[in-house]
Image (cartoon, rainbow, N blue to C red; front, top):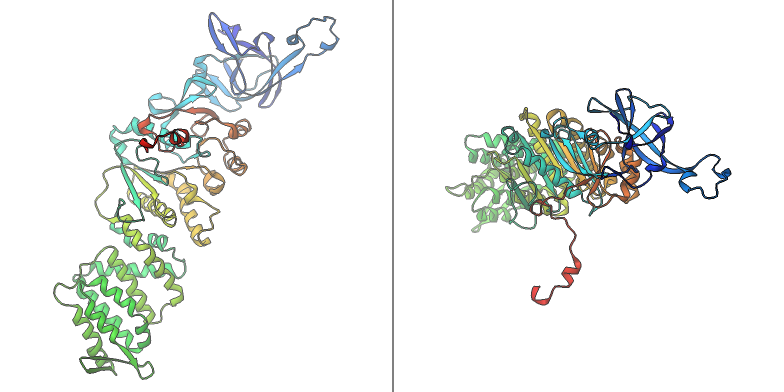
Length: 611
C-alpha cells in the first residue's frame, strides 16, 4: 500500500518519454522527516515512481525550475508567502517499469496527467540498480552517487564477456577503476576450477600495475636499455610466423612480406634437416658458386658474408682474412688472391671452386668449429643468406629489400632482449607486461606482437576458453593520428586491433582499453565497445569523441563529463539498465596502481638528513 507521505507531486505534462511534474509546496526541502527518520528528498539525478495499474513507472529527474502560479500577481493578500506564488517543476525522463519486483528498461508504459508521483523506497532503489539477477554472480564497483548508501553490483558475465572502455583525464581515477574491476573479478573467481581456463594479459605502459590485482601473477619488467629486463616466454612457432616478422620489421605488403615468407621457408627446411651443418654447407657452396659470374657483387657483399660466418662458426678469423684478400682482375671479371707468395686465379668454375670456395670452407669446417645455431641466430642466417642469394640471381631489387635488413639489424638485438623461445606453457594465467623501460619504437611493437600472438593462438587452439586483453594508456598503441610511422604500418596496426574488437567476441577474446585521450583512438574501436566507465574529461575533442561513439549515454550524463569529481565515473553499456554515476571504491593500498600524484609539499619540506 502506498504511503502518502512519500507522495511529492503530480504529473502536469506528458510529452512522450519526457514528463513535467509539479512538486507540492510542503515537499520542497532538502530532507524530509518521517517517524524520526531523515529521508533525502528528490533532486536532479534522483529517481521517482509513478504508479499505474499494478506496476510503477520509473523516471529519472534531469532538471528542475520554478514557475509562477497563475493569477498570483492579482492576489489581494499582501503577505502571501513566496512558496504560494511559485511552483517547483521537475523534468523527468521515463526509464522503465518496476513490476513484480523486477525493473524492466524501456518506454513500456506512460503515465496520465495528474498521476501522483512518489519518492522511491530503499528496496525499490535496490531493484532499479540491480544489474545482476544474482549478487553471487556480480562484482561491486562502488557507491551510487545519488544514493550513497547503495552499492552498485554489476553482472560478471555482462561486464567481462564484453569489450570495455575506461576513459578519463590523468588524475581522474581511471587507473583505480581498471584495477578495481579486475581485482574484484580475480578475487571472486580465482579459487574456482574453471578460472584457469581464462588468460588475462595486462599491457602496462607506465609500470603502474606490478602490485595490483593479485600476488598470484607473472610480472614482466621489460627493458630495451640493457639485458637486465625480464624476457617474455614465447613458443618457437613465433619465428615461423610471417605476420610477426612483418610487424617487427614493418615489412611492406607487396615486396618485403613475400620475401620474409621465403626466408621462413628456408628456416623451416634447415630446422628439419637431418644434419644441419651439412645442409648449411651445401647452401654456402651454392651461394659462393653464384658469385663466379658476379665478382664485383662478391666484393661488395664481403661484410654480409663475414656476419654469416660469425653466426655459424666459433672461429672464422682465418676464413674472413682469406675473403678480404680476394680481389678482382681483368676489369672486374676474374677472381684473384695471393697466399705465401703463390697466386690463385678463378679463370673457370673449376679453378674458382678449388682456389676460393673449397679454400674458404676448409678453414671453417673442422671439428668443434661450427655452432649449433637455432632460434634467432638460425633465422638471421636464413634472412641474410636469402638476401645475398637472391641478389646474385637478380631475383630481388636491392633498394626494395635492403631497408628490411636494416630494420631487422637494428631491432633484432632488442627482440632477443624481450622474447625468449620456449615450448613450455606458462602456468600462470595472469600476466602483467610493464613497458616503462622500453623505448618509444618498441612501445608500439611489443603490444602489437603480444596481442596478435595470443589472439591467433587462442583462436586456433583454445576452445571453450577466454582471453582478456587489457591495455592501459591505450592511445599509445591505438592512436589514429600518430605521425611517427608510415601510413601502411599504422593501417596494419589499427586493422589488427579492429579485427580483435570486431571478431574476438565469437572466439572468447575480450578487449579492455583505458585512455586519457579517447579522441586519439580510432572511432571504430571506441564504437565497438560494449561497456564504458567515463571519468572526468575536460578536452572538448575528447568529450565530443565520447558523444559520437558511445550510444549508451544520455544528454544529462554527457553534460556531466567535464565536472565529475575524482574517482567518480559514468558507468553505461550493456551491463547497465541506464547510465549510472558511481563513486568507484578505492582499493587497499597494497593493491592500488602506482599512479598517485607526488606530494610536493612533503617532498620540499624534507630535511637534508632524510634525503
